[in-house]
Image 1: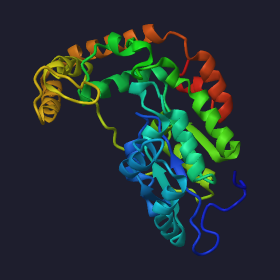
Image 2 (image 1 turned 120 degrees about the vertical axis):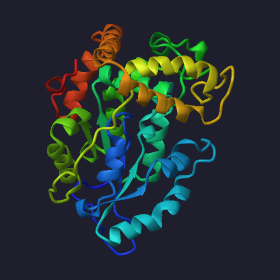
Image 3 (image 1 turned 120 degrees about the horizontal axis):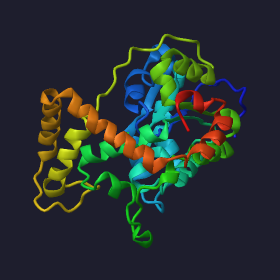
Image 4 (image 1 turned 45 degrees about the vertical axis):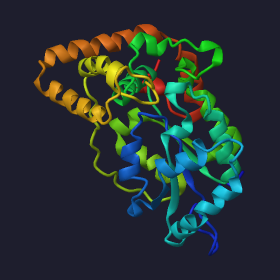
Length: 319
């Protein structure tokens, strides 16, 4: 565990600067952060590893093959170069927090791998109100090719542990945040709600730069990644069942390579032509369904998370 008063920027020549590791969660503006914040030298940051290398070295690798010293060697030079330029090296991939489609079955293992590799790292966690999160995660599931109904997705049969599936407790954020604090130190973990990024991006960015000891800076302009509507995705789900092969839907009746791109274009076109009231009604139906399924199951966890991160989540619409 590192000294919290140690400068983030390089100390002695040839020594890598302390990294910032952003672990997600999913659907919390991660792509925007990677494109507009984590690779902005004017902010003092350098994205040395985004989703592909992080996935390869920390997530997809067989547990018996993982070697923290080998990973440190792989990234040492790029971290040194960032430090020599006065930049904080950043690693970012939302999958480090775990897969929401698989109940976060390897969330703890990823945390342990990061701690073994970069024990002096600073950790950034971004969270999102659970009902909004679950709706967005299900929409992404359909975009990738999933074929289960919303009810089936949320209530997947576990098969007595044969395969990891969706779990509500994956979104009890105090669990993962608390574990990272135990590994890296309370002062080396910053967790922020996605809703703060949307409402007050300058405050969101200011907390990150303050956490890293960097000067304040104006946030880059943001542009929302607009998801297809609930109705167009509900229609796409029917096609997924028969045509789209994906890890989330491994056995369609008739596999059609590249068909998913065509279906994405069809969703966008459908949303352009469909009556707005019709789209709003279907969207509201899914939101009501999520609210009914979730109820107040996250209230206690959110209270604990608020204490852990020093943010009153109730002010952002959390239970």
